[in-house]
Length: 361
Image (cartoon, rainbow, N blue to C red; front, side, top):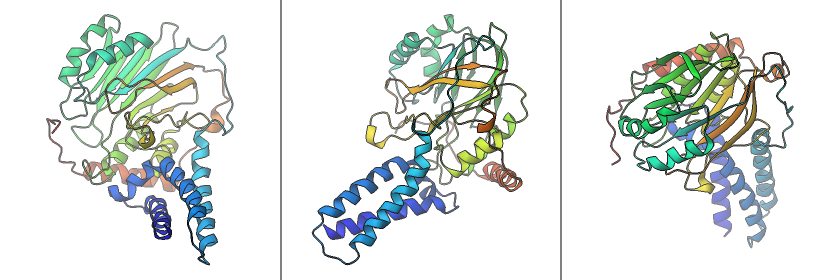
């Protein structure tokens, strides 16, 4: 038991230190995803320590060390809980009507199309975004077009397809390929019936993992390219999608600072989405950021519809006359801007070598 305890302490230290090393290889980036689970295991190991039958003179050093690891992780994670204080905002007379959207990585090989359609019909959002949606998914979603007459479709068979449907009029829509010609991001300009304009970005960069991309270079380059594009838009902005990243990672924080956007998870909840089937191994990788004149009333996950991701549901309104969120904007330093440009260039130079058509096997 004592040896098992020591191995757990060493493993928890390793998983804590690996993300601190500024290397883009997946070995160093993947442990960022499991910070919540690592924190739980620190507590479990700490308790296990008292059950170990050992009289080692170093026992309390190890227990104290675990306490320090817990404090380190907790300081970061507490920002993404309701315990962390932020101001609550209510919709005023000059605000827009409430707008609802659903963002869902549908999993390209998920054939339970009717479950997703029922989900949309149940919550009837004004707009919804699908990722990993291919030609089969596009065909399956055609019945929804009678209620969603405005759409922007990027149909791909490489698990990076993307479809945007809206009841709100689309004024302009673009597809960007910031770092690779098979990884799209969408930019959609909309105007509500009560006269409020805003821009919706949908993103889905490739993840660093042993089964996909060896490094995080394309992911980080794609996200920071989006951040750079956001700063050129003088309208309320929302960026939504499967970031394949967590909010507390260095690249996510750099994205937030570079784009001058707000992370609505802060002071609210983790909103963990992947993996949908395994609650204890679920990570918050479907993220959202917004500009200061967009106010979030609700952000949560919805029920599983057969995908490996849970869908994200959001309610928000636009208010140009409320400046109370300005203090939540953090801006990148000159050094961080230079770093962001370097990461964008590295992303463009990386060759993902993806297949144009991906099969489930």
